[in-house]
Length: 548
Image 1 (cartoon, rainbow, N blue to C red):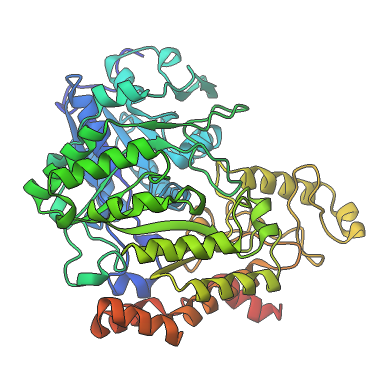
Image 2 (tube, rainbow, N blue to C red; image 1 turned 180 degrees about the vertical axis):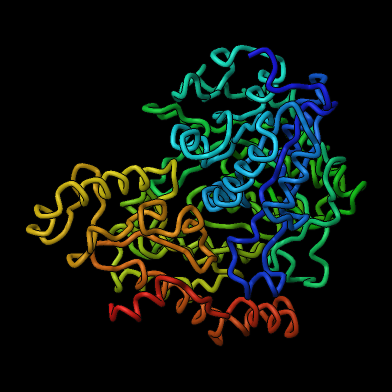
C-alpha cells in the first residue's frame, strides 16, 4: 500500500474522531447534565505526533459536539482525509467497548457514502479484539500498541506488513503485521511534550459533578492529561493493558512522560485556557514516588497548586502518608481508590487481596485527614460474590463514607482475563449442556466462570453473545447494562443490588451530613438529588417479568 487513499480532493492527512458517548448513559442522567465531557487526550496527542512529522491533522470530537452517527458521517466524508482514525476510548479504558455500537454505525455509513475512505480503529476494544473487529466492522485497519506510529506509518505509505501494530485484511483474510511498537520513556519525552490543544474546544469540556462539588456551577473548562501509560498490575477484571500486550504474552509495564513536560502542559492549560478542573488520566498516578512527587513539587514551585482542582487514581497499598501533604499542596484534591470488595476472599480472586480491612480504613482516613477527598471504587458481582459478600461491601462503603462512591457491576471487559474466562464458559455451556446440568453448575475449573445452578445455557453470558444487548451492555450506566452472573447470583440480581446500594448510600444520613459540612448544604442536596436516582434496567425488568 503506497497511500491509504486517493488524495485528489484532500489536503488533510489525518482526521481523528472521538466517538459520541451519549448512548452509554440512561436518559435521566443525560437530561441532568450528569456525564463529564472529557477532552480526547489520546486524539490530541496523536494529532500533535502526526503534525511533528509533517502531516496535517484535525480532530472531530463527536462527543462534545453531541453528533449522531449520521451527523458524524457527514463531517467525516466532507473532511475527505487520507486516513480517518477513530480512537475508541471512553473516560477510562473500560469505557471503550460500550462505544462500538456508535462506531460500527459510523464506519458502515462512511463506507456507504464513500468506499474510498480508509478507516483505522484504535483504542482498548479494537486492540483487545482485532480479528473480531476487522471481521465485523466496516473498517480497513486495526491498530494495537500506542497507535502513534501506526497512523504515521500508514500515511508515509509503508507496506501494511511493515506497519507497527497493524492488523488488516488481505484477500479477504485478517492479517497481523509487525508487533506493536511501544514508546519508551525517552520516546515520550521527545515526541509527546504537549497535545494539540488548539484543535479542541477546551472551554466546552465539563468535569464530573463530584469533581466540582466545591463549586458545582463551574464545571467548565475541564482538562485531562496522561503522565504515564500502562499499568504493572494484572487485575483479572481490568482491560487497560489490552492495547499493549501481545497475544499470548504479558508485558504489563508502565512508561512515564518527563515531569517537566507534564507541568509545562498543565501550566499552558491553566494560563491559556483557564483550566482549573483537571484529571490525571493515568491508571495509577500514585505509584512511582519519584515520578508523581517530581510533578507535584514542580506544580508547587510554579504556584499552580492553589489554582488547580486535580483528581487522580491511586491504590490503597501504594499510598504513603509522607507524600499526601505535598500532593494536596500541588492541587490534588481528589484520589480515586480501587477498594473493590469488603471480602478478603473475593479480593484474592482478583489479585487485590494484599491489603485487608484495617489498612483500607486506615488509608482512606489518612487521605481525608490530609484534606484530599476520596472516590471509593467498589465492585458487586465478582466471581466469588454472594448476597452476603455484596452486603459486606456495601456496609464497608457506608463505614468508610468516601466523598464519592463509585459502585460498579463486575464486567468481563474485552481484553481482561475475565473476558477470556467468560468466552470459554460461554462456549462450554453451548457445547456440553447436558454435562453441565448434570453437575448442577459450572465449577471454576479450566479457567471457567461459575454460573447459577438454574442458568439457561441459551441465555447470553456476554453482551455480545446472541440474545445480548451488544457492545452497549458494557456500559455501567445504561438501560442495557449486562454484568456477569456468579455461582449464586443472576445478572439481574447483581445490578438490582448495585442500584439499590447506591440509593442507600446517597440517602444515608451520615453521608449527607458529611457532604453538607464539606461542600455546603445547597451543593450537597443538589448532588444527592441527581445521583440517588435509580435507573431503569432491562435485566431488572426481565427479572421481574420472569419471576427470578
